[in-house]
Image 1 (tube, rainbow, N blue to C red):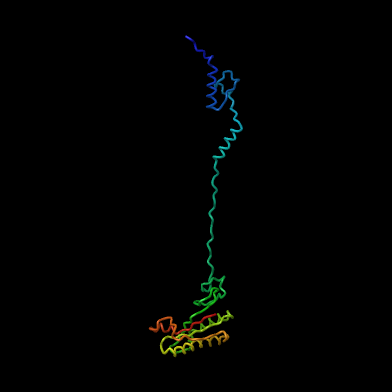
Image 2: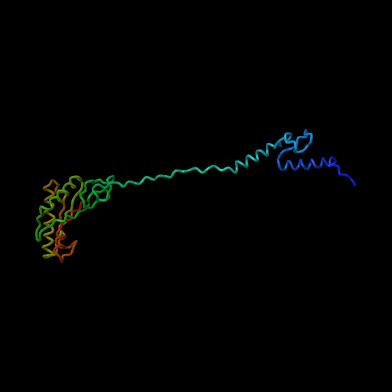
Amino acid sequence: MQKHNLHSRQPGFILCLLTLGISISGYALDPSCPIGHEICPEHLVPTQYTTGYDEMINHQVVATTYAAPKVVPPVVVAKAVPETDTDKDGVVDSKDECPDTPLGYKVNPVGCPISVTLHVNFPHNSSVIPASNESDIIDLVKILHDNPPAKVVIIGHTDDVGSDKYNQTLSEKRSKAMGDKLIANGISADRITTTGMGEKQPIATNKTAQGRAQNRRIQVNLK
């Protein structure tokens, strides 16, 4: 029977160990080792990888490394502050050329009055302006003084009690009475036009005392 010589197979055995050692540990055997296998770890030397492989590894690490997302602070939007309308005429102060318009006066786009209905509580069959309306007259005079180019058209109205002809004359007397008040307060007569519409333009029903009182009025248009 043929005896197996372990030493005769040593080169192949060592080659297997060498291959196994490289694939598992990544190390190469030092040929100076007297025994020639991994029983002498002090003789093992690390395998030197090429520069190209190191660069590949580094590139892979960089490619798989992600920076933390930047935290973007929320944008704070300041709330718009509404502009002031001091005289409450619908035109803000920055665009209002007549900032002291009395409450209730209609105004043009720049805030100056264009017309106003003075609810003068004329007694029936009268063109005398009651003392209770003096404050309305003062406000109107102030507007005309503050707007020298403005001219005023005063229109008198009546209820439907009486004839059309009579009410027409009465409405003209009422508008003239207001014009005289303005002239007495320093408004030039050439800035004032007076006219009457009689009972033709009611703003309320003439079937009730309250409605007729509303129709006995004066309308003032500025232009």
